[in-house]
Image (tube, rainbow, N blue to C red; front, top):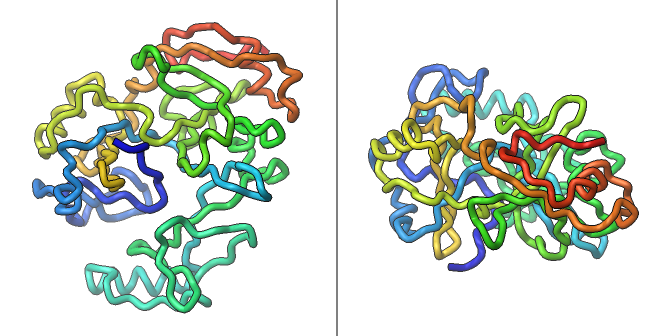
Length: 324
């Protein structure tokens, strides 16, 4: 089994899906619901999903570590999206054809501008030198996180680019049931994608920190293993999400041996999210942030605060508090 895959594109559902004319459980402004059928996606079968690594799908925002200005750097997800006129045209076509296949984009004119530092995600198709949008009308991509950009202030809180370090939440190497908060060299995370979770991300489903003392972490994709995954069958998966304590998660992402990623989200199965008590938020966590505050050149609050808590154990992730 190679290293878990990098999340660069939209991940397909493990089941073939259909569209129902009903209010979306995932997006308030969406008047249709994408739901799973009982038919397993041929992509999943081709990738031998029964032998794949099942991991927890975390509810945050996607990040990427790659080079910027010659050094390992944290990048934030920024999909290039259509402007209002093009979006209206796209939705009208989608509604009348019940599909987006056959729609033609003018890539030079139909899309909003992005910063000069923006790069397209891996495996984005190109035509005539321009990146081509996916089936949803988006061009997945990344922008470097810069400390003076307030839009990415929570991304900045978990990285010290001068020290070349990131604040990561991960399974303990000796006890997989135990999570640990650790400072990891960005060089060790090169070409990985990670999920930024915390107080000010996606409504904070894991109950991390508080408004007064916000707490955020990076979690490498594929690092949180589902210990006892259910079989890939619609009714058994739905029962697992409903009845198993380990099923109190947003979804599952399968990392297949050939690098293919496949997912299922609770909403695909007609189930709600977030849960009042999440499996992830209930896990025990220990702080392993060695060193002193002086080591962190950027004087980051989270880095210095967690270094002061080194060795401290919390019975639940959501109980982590900073002693400021």
